[in-house]
Amino acid sequence: MDAPLGGLSTLLDAVSQSPHPDEVARAIVEGPGAQVGATSAAVLWANYPTLIILGSHGYRAPEISGLAGVDMGLAYPLSHAYMESEVIITPTPLVEERYPAMGRSGSRWHHLKERIPDGDHVSAPIHSRGRTIGAFALNCPESRDWSSLDLATLSGVSHALGMWMSHPDSGIPVASDAVEVAAGVLTERQRQILVMVNEGRTNASIGHALGLSVSTVKQEMARVLVALDVPDRVAAVRQAHDRRLLAVDQP
Image (cartoon, rainbow, N blue to C red; front, side, top):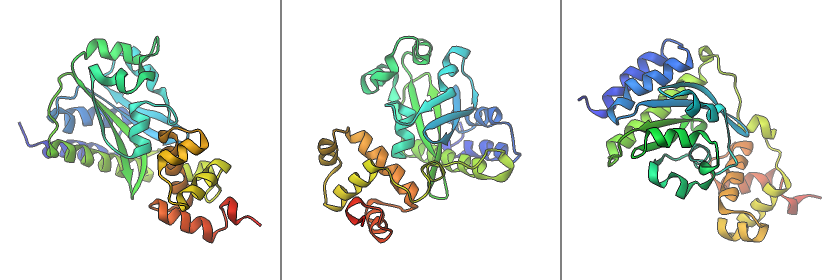
């Protein structure tokens, strides 16, 4: 078997030809996905507040139907991967324990877990120019110990997909949190959170004060960073002060 990173060439060859998104998903499975035992893949585009499926390969109809639109605000692995910009790898037996919403009656997850009872499910962000612009999913029928090289492969997939999705020839319309939030405009909740960030409070302390979960605080901060076009919390507070966007700065 080729080294895991070698499978990326299959994906790169595919995305260089302006393919249909389903062909991109196929290339993920047949290239880098094959190195980690994946049999299905899906690619989703972020159009706040929803992750919208672009292409898929290897799923049965009942398994893919629920991916038509994934709410970024709900506790799902894909929304978590997007909002936190991190790879989430969850063995089948632990999915509902970690993400109770997945166990709701009639969800696509029930079909998938019946076919892959002992596998791993990967949810990962798609990056382009330092931004998270989507997410992709891989499903592996057999669980494995994920090595640093495996994770490097997933990172390579993320950036390859980012290059494809952000290229004009992809046909994917430009959309981002910044567009939807109206760049530089913060909600009252976001202003309150930034005031508390400026006070040095932790996410847990902010959540307690506002009656929000830590996850919701993180999600709101992720939207703030995009809306203000800044890389971190410190820069967000600084720019919010400079632009008089915080409630305490209002005349």
